[in-house]
Length: 88
Image 1 (tube, one colour):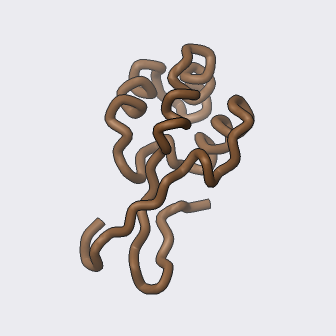
Image 2 (cartoon, helix red, strand yellow):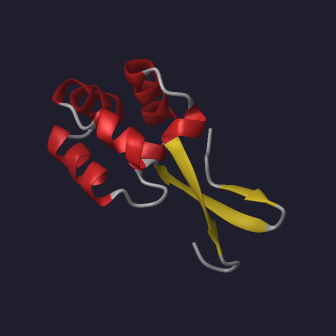
Image 3 (cartoon, one colour):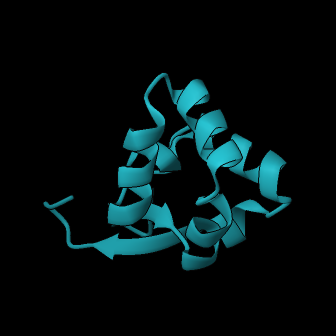
């Protein structure tokens, strides 16, 4: 499942919402995300801090962990950002 979609010929990229970032910035959730994504908790902390668009935290497996651990729905977890055509 890919969250980088095209709607009405405008590219949309995803990033985590501020509320989602606050909810997942807890050691147990960071550890579960690290296990799911095959990386370190330190890397997850960096991703949370930077909150770059289309990062590993927007992957379907990470969103599933966030959903299961926080009880949030996808629309509260992810934010869309439009992108000018020809750029990402």
